[in-house]
Length: 243
Image (cartoon, rainbow, N blue to C red; front, side):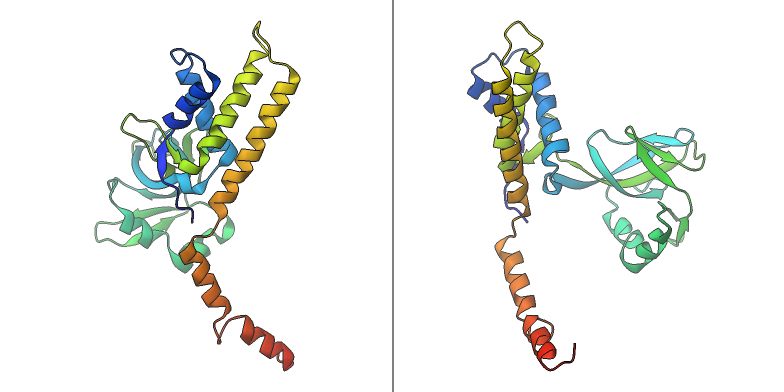
């Protein structure tokens, strides 16, 4: 797991303004949108996301999910507050969840007053920022757990520090592409250059995210060299014709 700390998405936005030497007063919103697009749809790093919970009110068969949500992990009927991590762990853990999802359906958990769990065959999916249920649950509360971007004190998304240079490169590419609709057009060579830089730095950011930490690497080495389950055991059994 990467060790880069999270920083505000304003960091790459301000860096882009500094590197490009342009006025920041007008383009902050659009640069921020481009930065979020690079992070969400380009680099798409799991490590910039944090597990969160929210209580939704269903309107008919749909309920709006928080705008920073990238992936909804599960849903529990009722208002269980936002500090119900243990409940989600109990509802969506281990073999039970694997068995329930065997038919590729999405299930809703209902928790009774005596704390018993029941699994409803209510299917749902996410469309255009809304949870869409197979049944009409109008007026009911649903508590969801999702992965979403952390936010700074001003409500801006937080991104991995290792993504800053890639996000700056994407902003420069988008700025060059937008110039094609203005009197001061950048040529296609400039556009191709900024695109290549963005692709290169995006790949580096993804690669850095995929790098193992020292503790992860040591754990894998220990597993491989375990005399009972590791590589040596497998080679020995092959040499004896036991595999």
